[in-house]
Image (cartoon, rainbow, N blue to C red; front, side):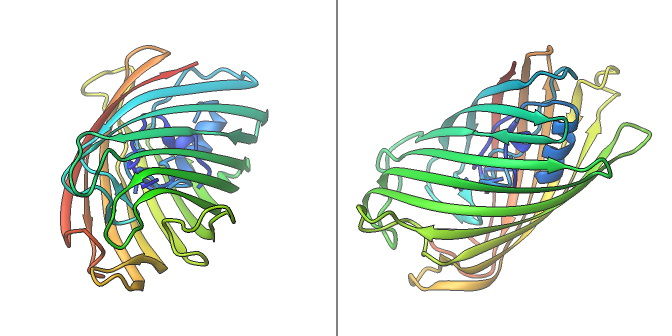
Amino acid sequence: MKLVSRFAAFALTAVAGASALHAENNADQQNVADQAAAAKKDYSTTNAVATGKDVKAPVAPVAATSPMFTLNVSENYDSRYMFRGVDVLAGTGIISTTFAPTWHITANDTLTVPLWFASAVKSNKNASSYREFDVPVNYLHTFDSGFNLGAGYALYNYFNLPGGNRPGGDGIQNEVNVTAGYSKTLKNGISLNSSLTYYYELGTANQYTYGSVNPGSSFLTPSLGATIPLNFIKKDGSVTFNPNTQYNFSFVYNPNQNGTYVSGANNWQFQLPVTWQITKVWSVTGYWAYSYQGLDLYNTAKSLGWAGCSVGASF
């Protein structure tokens, strides 16, 4: 699962740490402070940060009600599958679906299971009809002061995994994360947020011979973001600009072009999403993103950009 790398119109409220679109995401993607603010407003679903999916960074608010259970679904397209600084499927984008039920345990506690299924847009030497199904489970507690703490687990299932330094065929990966964040809403309606999420790879179940990520490796994602109403477009605040940036650190998590796992400043990236909440249920999001890395990461250019869009529904 690579930080879409994510990209869902509601992912930031769904994930406790994002995931972070793997697609980075992107995936996806992507942050915890937005999730906290969303939980306070009873938005349904990260980013994306808990999953690291770079493609899943934008936020789509829904009506400020207080249901016990909410649901967000979205259909997403990303021109690249970026996950934690790596261009996973160089030469093709991905189409993904997110189905994210959230249990609002209390006014300050949420449990979200943002299921994510993705397929490569086309087959090539790297994509090879790639498919992925992820099952994250994320808990988030929001304090009245604006701080939040969370923890999560993610099960990644890969089908037709690309070759190269990553073994071909099917694979499975187990990951845990912890996160902390802070959000603040200003008088002009702009909200600011920050988060720090740490991911740790547990490795592969015994019945599998390998996983996609080095067991015992870890990844650290500090992020900053904002939600800015574009009142000059829609005076009711239904159109928002949600910029976010990350400076990520890898601890023997990603391999370089020689297949050696490396540590250090993994990559710097930013996303520039705009979301239009068309109705209380439906929203659309479009974004452009950029990443720069200096570790000579596998299959990834030093400097690259990508874009995506999604249609989401919140219930």
